[in-house]
Image (cartoon, rainbow, N blue to C red; front, side, top):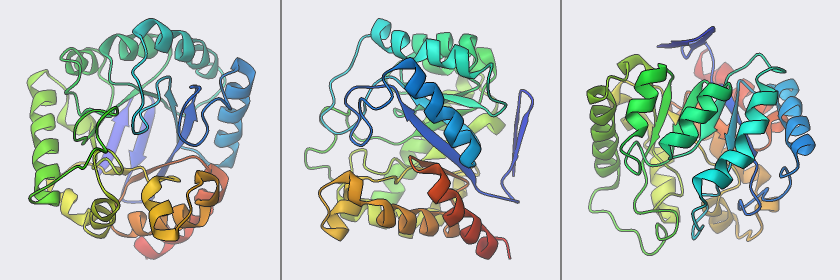
Amino acid sequence: MKLKFHNFEFDFLKKTYIMGILNVTPDSFFDGGRYLSFQNAIDHALRMVEEGADIIDIGGESTRPGAEPVSIDEELKRVIPIIEALSKKISIPISIDTYKAKVAEKAIEAGATIVNDISGLRFDPEMAKVVSRYKVPVVIMHIKGTPRDMQKNPHYEALIPEIIEYLRNSIVIAKQAGVDENMIIIDPGIGFGKLPQHNLQILKNLKEFSKLGKPILIGVSRKSFIGYVLNESSPEKRLEGTASAVAVSVINGANIVRVHDVGFMAKIVKLADAIKFS
């Protein structure tokens, strides 16, 4: 399975790829406020590239549980200068983490080459058209509810089948808008409308998502289900738990892992890959 776009090629039969997180927000759950300044953001992105990131994922709106939405103008103000500058400095893909079509479009024009949509193309009906028009890969994620209300007692009759059905329908939305089937990546949405036991079941049954025939992205980095298991309320103390979850994700079929701690996790992924591809 390969992903070819612009001048990039990802061969998922050879390695698991690392997406480094760059949140240029004041309120993200782990690193909110750290990279609000232009120079801090650029320096951190360059550091992640040096540490082994294959993609830099830039987000200008927090989607942590309970987060309030921000305006399109505010989101653009946060992300576009960073994307414009980084696209001239790095030779790996830049992803825009947004569910707003206008933000995605402006980000692509500024140099982004991947769209990462937490809504699976559901929150903005124009998003699929933008992805199709610019011929970029899109990550379609499962979410139950919205960031503001997704953690208010989420319930599933059949967890894995329901998520698969949601993702399958999002794939249909993409294809109907003209998105190339080979440009679609799926993400089961760890922590987005899921209780801790739901997240653990997703990781245990990750291979089930391969029936959709798409590369799988997984984002477990420092999330609250890790804190729940380890009894660690602070995201700062969830590094080892993240490493465990990343290793399990790779072995169970993840093709891309989205992480905060690129250098540390690159070693975890390298060893997991050695086992996975042995």
